[in-house]
Length: 86
Image 1 (cartoon, rainbow, N blue to C red):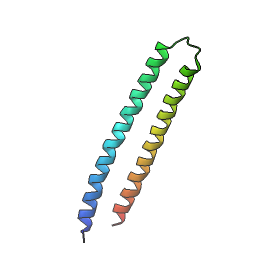
Image 2: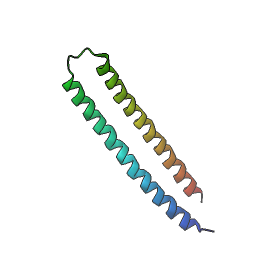
Image 3: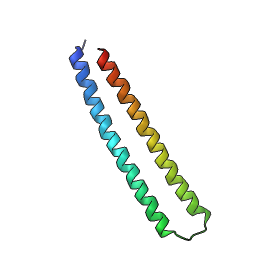
Image 4: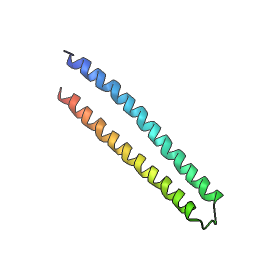
């Protein structure tokens, strides 16, 4: 059976991986925002429904990444609460 210190250490290592994932999510959100701006500039004035659909899809992707980030924040909080109770 693992000691409390070993469990805390393992949880800390896992949380570091989560933080790396959070940074990647933030970077992806930033890149999507940049892509959406580039797309808007490239397709300025287009009345095609496909342009609107593309913008909507990018907005949906950003929203889902934001929700994913929120879920990771909750997971970190829960893991930290657990280790604090050990």
